[in-house]
Length: 275
Image 1 (cartoon, rainbow, N blue to C red):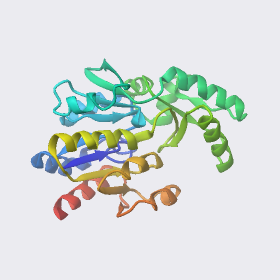
Image 2: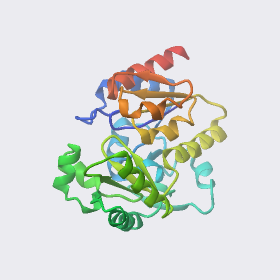
Image 3: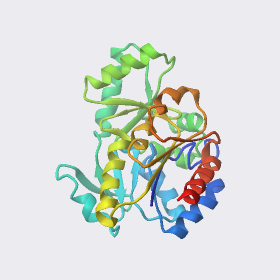
Image 4: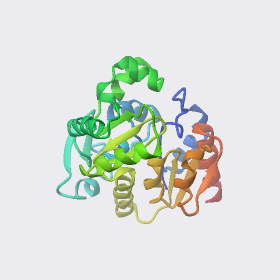
C-alpha cells in the first residue's frame, strides 16, 4: 500500500503545521509497512525536517511536482533513475533529486514579465522578505527562510483576484510554456506537469519493484487534483466551496469535512479498515 499525501491543510494543520492529530493513522501505516509519500508545494529544505520527524524513508514530491527526492539506498532507486535519460539529477539536502521542472530563475523572470503583460502587480516569493513570508504563511522564521529556498516553483499573490485576471495570467504563462496552479494560500508558477506526473512516475516505480498495490491519495486544494486522478482511492479533506467544481470530476471520490490531520487520520483509518 502507498499513501500519497499533500501536506498543508491535509497531513499538517493549516495554522500550527502539526501532524499530531494524525498520529493514530501514521502508526497504523507503520504496522502495515505501508509507504507514505509526501506530495507538496513545500521546498526540499522544508520537507527534510518533516521527513526525518516522521521516520518514513520513501521518496517524496516537492514544489508541486517540480522535483522528486529519494535516498541513495531506497529500493526504488534504479527504477526512478532510469525513468527518462533526459531528466537531470543532482544531490541536495542529503537526497538524490530528479528535476522535473523549469529552473527557478526562469520562473522568477517570467513572473515579472507576466506581471507587466497583464498590468497586475504579482508579488512572488523571490520579491518577498522573510518577514513578509512569515506574515503570509504563519511559519516560524527558520521555516520561512527554508520556504524561500526554491528550485522549481514560484508562489505568488494576486492583489485583486478575479476569474478574468486569473485567466489572463494563465494564458500569459502558457504562451511561455509554463502553467499556473492554485494552492491553499498562493498561486504557483511552474514549468512542469504538476503533482500528477511526479506521482505517476512514483506509482510506476512502486509497481515495478513490488507488483500491484493499492494507492491512496489525500489532498485539499486544486493543485492536488492531478495526482488524485492517478491513485486508486482519492480523498478530499475539508469542504472548500471554491474547489467543488474541480474535484467533482474525480471518480469514486471520498470526502471528509474535517480538514487537516484530524480528517486525514479518520480517512486513512477508514480506508485501512475497509481493506
